[in-house]
Length: 351
Image (tube, rainbow, N blue to C red; front, side, top):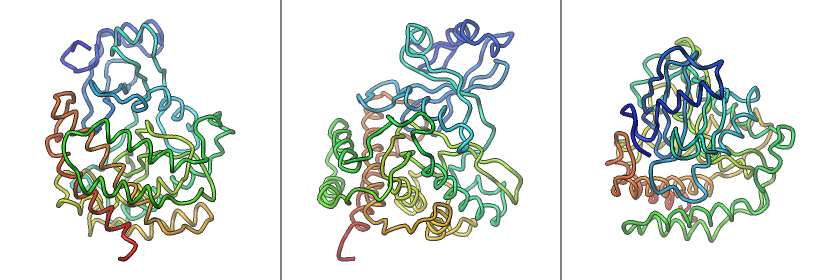
C-alpha cells in the first residue's frame, strides 16, 4: 500500500472518498487527517479527525500477516455483537471489497473513537488515586466475568468458535504461528511449548466468548480521580468461543509482566505501590461476579507466557524484516526468553 498523506498503510484521501460515499452522515466538510496510534504490536490502528466525529480505523500489519491472524471481519463482528453488554466502541463498517483497495489495500474496519487513557506505563497512574486504581483493578475482573457470562447464541455468535477441543487447537495454532515466525533459536520457548502440549487440561467445565488478549493496556480508562472505569475494551482480533480460563490466565501474566526483564520492554501500568489489587484479589473478584470457584491457573498462566512469547517473536520477525512501523519494536524481542522462562517456572510440577 502506497503511503498517502504521510500515514503508512492508509490512504487518507481514499478514506475520505469512501466515507462520503458510504456514510455521508459522518463525512465532514474538509479533508480528513489521520495519525497512527502507537501501542499495538500487530494490527495497525489510526485515529481519524475531520469527520463529524472522531473515528478509528483498524487494518492488518504491513507485512507477514499469517493466514489465520489479523481477521478484521471477526473483530468487527464480535465488537458489534457485544455492544451494550460489555464496554466496547460502536462500530461503523467493515470493508473487504473493491473499496478497500483505495483506502488500505486490504480489509479494514471503522469504529467510533472512545475518549479515554490507555494505561500502558506507570506514569499514567498519576491521574487517579490509589483507591481509584484498586477499584479499577477489580472492575477489570468483573467485566471479564460479564463477558464470559454472555450466551454466544443470544448475540448471534453461536458459530464464532468450537469449544470442544479448544485448548488442543490453541496449542496447534500457536505452534504454527511460532514456526512461521522463527528467525533465531529460542530453547526456553521450545521447552515451554513441549511441556504445555504434554499437559493440556481436560475440557473446560464451561465455555464462553474469549477475548484472547485481555489486559489493562488493551482498554481505555476514563472517569474522575477516585472513580476510574473502563470506557472500552479494545483489540478483539483473537476473540473466539472457548475456555474462559485462558483469559484469566492471560490477565494474570500481564498483571506481573513489568517484573520480567526489569519491565523495560513491557507495556503496562501495574506496579507495586500504585494501588492496584494483588492478582489473587482480582481472581476473587472474578469468581464472585461469575459465581464460580476458580481452579488452579498454573497451566493457563504458563500458556499465556507461551502465547505472548510467540506473538512477540512474530513482531521481532517483522521488525528485523523492516515490515512494521512504530516505536519500541527494537526492544520487543528481548522479552521473549524471560517470558518463556517464567512460563517454565509457573508450570514446573516440582515447585
